[in-house]
Length: 314
Image (cartoon, rainbow, N blue to C red; front, top):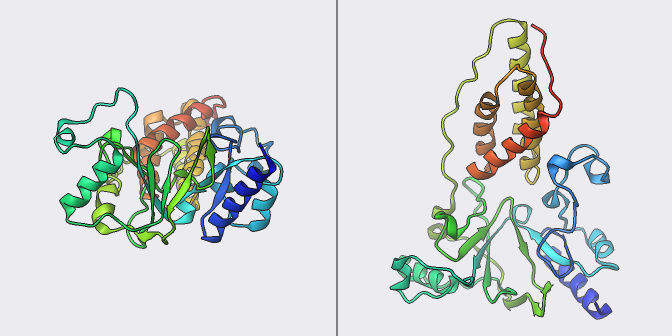
């Protein structure tokens, strides 16, 4: 890739950071994070940033110009923006993929892509199409950037195809999500700023459908009153206290570590996998993690913990 392209990518990363957006490298010509090169369940703690626990791309994102300049010194990384630390909600108005069939209610509205769906939503709500920071994507879609509301639960990612969120062909990226920044290049297409207006605060009418579903009521974990039961109860309480203190950007990793730790006790027979899930799920959901990512992370942590069973003497 020409040096001029590397310079352009570095400048775009610095420009995004100057807006207060936390950036990190994506693989050249790709949407996937360049680092770390391993999943949390395969973290061997050899990566310098994982010495005290797995650190994913969200925890590595930064606004530090010196770190950004070093990262984009020799390799033409694309640019990722970590939406959670950046306090951004990005609405992705997508183009239909081959074979996409829209629900009849949208077909009758003459909808062809995510932009059309969003225009119909604006019309139904009696609201104008937002005037906010806007980027064209490599696929021909559009990213609308908004500031995260100051109050309420942290918003998470949604997928239009899942039936949650705003509608078909519309995804959102928020806490736990990333977006490819302007200046990035995929194939022959560059992510380009269409409207350089400062991001609007996400309007209430758009925010309300995006709030996560409430967590299910907590299920008490019943343990024996003997020494082993008291030990396991204390282990659960310590784990929940540590999980509750997890910082933004590290909550999913903290949940995995909690599930791994209690999973060792489950593998040793002191708990069941269901009891671990009952203990961790409400705590994770209260931190803003979605039901889907909570279930997936707990399963992964339990699997890792089962590799090192830990028994408790009665």
